[in-house]
Image (cartoon, rainbow, N blue to C red; front, side, top):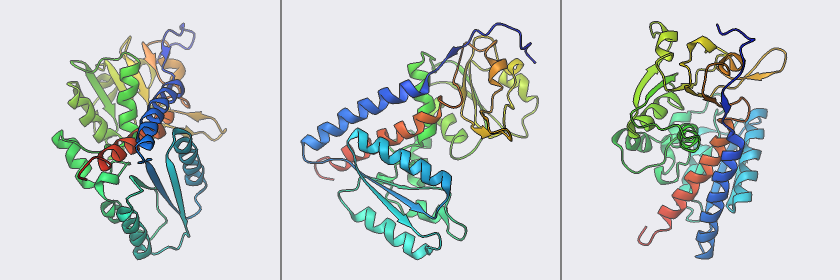
Length: 293
């Protein structure tokens, strides 16, 4: 473990500032579409009264409205049936004014989230979770890809962390972050290792990374002496401790003494998720508004 008295050297990667730049660029794309009479439309479906989901949806709505989207939020009761939710999704699929559909997850118990995601028109699947978009990511073809992994790639680009030819280690293999992020990095010519609970000598593998990305949901699991000197560290985790503090999956204070650059928690990867959701929606609107579609 790195001595806590060691002088901090790592540069902080300001996710808030970068996300603001992304949203400003999206706003310009929205204005261009609106000028052609085709303002982008985003529909968000919220089922139930989960407090965290409600806050997240409010933040999405605000950011989307500020960027110039026409935003529609559909709030459904927690005991909404699968059939009712499917009918709502199908109606949004048919609505030509809606270019992006987001069903807020997790869904209440009793609803089949996978079936709901499959029901979304993949061209409007701005979360990038539909099997057709997953296949497009694997095949390297056109699609809409998950927002948090896209945000990580954008952070690397804007922080000057070149991916081509570099060793990228992703800690975590979830379908939401780890796996799609590994594929996105591969598409940028990185050499990628995906680690998980069965990885032998995880600290040693992490020390090989030029770019280390932690996405496991375990508070401060990645210690300072797991990090290669000068490496770029992206901390996707956000965990609330019993004392109320929010921390990431990386022991941030320790990592500061070893890493070259690191994202804070909060204020690092988190703001990029909504920014890339807006970017995905703008992309979907441009594709669906093209002549002949």
